Image (cartoon, rainbow, N blue to C red; front, side):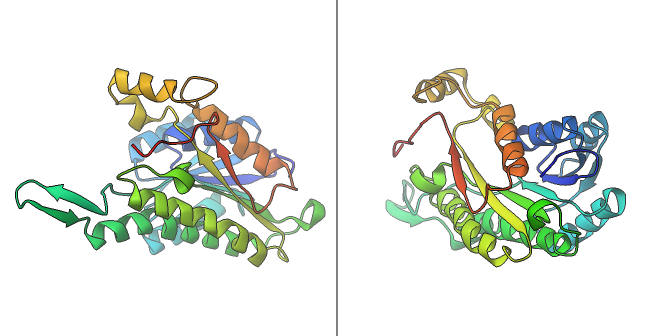
Length: 260
């Protein structure tokens, strides 16, 4: 896909972190960008800085997402690129020792469902709504109508203790990629996912410096945290390269997460 002024994109979670870097990179390539986020002040600020559009969208709410896509399309036309970075989840071990009761306590099923809804269900929702719009667009080179890029995690393959919710939901995102790419192959819509390792995001930025140093040291090479711009670079390559389809790709400096 040739990136430029005739192409529009939607980036969820575009107010910060990986999503912000991706929105900025797409805009720098001449793409018209709409940012979906729940952080209105920051989302609007980022959108203004790149000449894009901000729409407040809750990825866990169907009506909010449908309205968001409608607003983006009204302003920029049918998106050809969707990059889904937003998520919400909770932590918890399958069983954790409760000192007060002297017994093991399970993480509530409601917490698990919350994470699955905020990661896996939301990924399907964003991808499916986007694909529905892309299906009606005029085909481009090789009959392509668009590309959808989801965000999984290295935790999809080597989740740590306490990541039973996050890890399994992100594994589900990887599981979406190939069947969805096959569902959409006759329409000309590609689907891929990126599995980031330990990246310098706002969440990590607030960690204890010693913890951050330890995380950086655990990366085989280069011995540092990933940069959001590196995620954005891969997302843009997935958009540009028409033969990139049905893939879930690790971007992690060769890290393999230990159990804890």
